[in-house]
Image 1 (cartoon, rainbow, N blue to C red):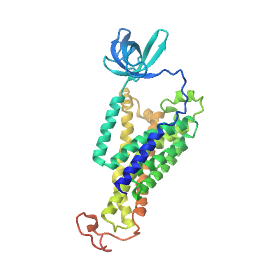
Image 2: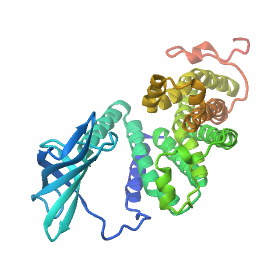
Image 3: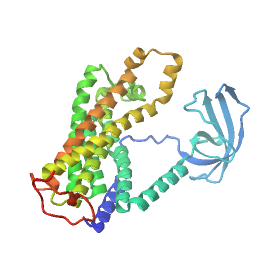
Image 4: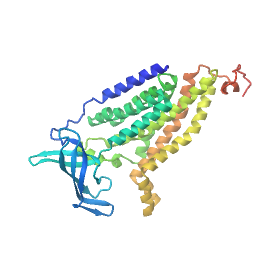
Length: 391
C-alpha cells in the first residue's frame, strides 16, 4: 500500500472518530445540574481545616477568579470540602488552576472546588507523545496515534453508552474488540495481508481467552463483586446490571491490547522475512513465525504480570507489612480475580503466536514446501536458486 493511501486511511479514520464525539449522551442530564468552570485560586484560608496525620478534615476556604463561562473575570468565594480521604481530598495553593461548580443564588455567586485542572498538562503530554510517534514512525506513527484516540472515543461514546442502555456487556465487548482489532491493524499496517494475518491471530486469541474466562470464572467461584464502583452502579441501575457479564467482559478487554500487539509482532516479522526471502516456502515461513513467537511470548506474558503487579503494588506491600498469610492472600476474591485474569490472558497470548504464524504463512506465500538458501536470508548477497539439499 502506498503512503498516499495510508495517509488517506488515517484521515478517514480520524474524521470518523471526530464524528463519533458528537453522538448524544444516553443519560439525559437534568437542567438543574451545576455547571463546571475553570477558576484560578487567588487566595486560600486554611483556618477551618484540621490536619490529622497526612489527611485533612474540614473546609478550605478560597477566593477564586472564574476564567471560563458566562461569569469569566469575576472574583467569588469558593469552598473545598475535606473528608479525611487521601485518595479523594486535595489542597489548593494560590495561583493554581482548578475546576469548580458555580452556584447561583439570591446571595450571589459561589463555587465548590472539584479538583485541579490538569487538562493543560494532559494535552502537553499527549502532544509530546504524538510528536515522538510522527518523528520516529512517520505515517505508521500517525496511524498509531489515530488508533489510540479512536479507541478512547469508541469506548466512551459507543461501548459504555450501549452498556447503559442495557445491551449485553459480553457481546458488546466482543464487538468492541473485533472493531478495534480491525481498525488498529489497518491503521498501523494498512489494508494488506500482513494486517489480515494479525487480525486472524488476534481474533483467535481473543476467542480462546473468552472461552477460558467463562470456564475459570465458574471454577474460581468469582463474580464482579470486586469491580471498582460496582456497588453504586448496581444501586443506580436498580440491581438490573449483570455484574457477572461485566466482569467477564473486563477479562478479555484487559488482555486484548497485548493480544493485538503480539499478533502484529508475528505478522510484521513474517512479512519482513518474506520480503527478504521472496522464495521462502509456506512451511519455512511458518517455522520463522513460530521462532519469533517463542521469543516474544516470554516477555509478553511477563508484561501482563508486571502490569497487574504494578497496579496493586501498594496492596501487596500492605499485605506483607501486615504479615498476612500467603494462603489468605491467594484466596481473597479480588486477588484471585487478578490471578485468573493474568493467567487466562497468558493462555490467549500463547495461542496467538502459532495462530498468527500459521495465518501469515498461508497469506504471505503460495509455496507449500521447499527450502531456501542462506543467501536469500542475508541482505546484500545475490539470491541463488533453491537447493533442496541445503539445510
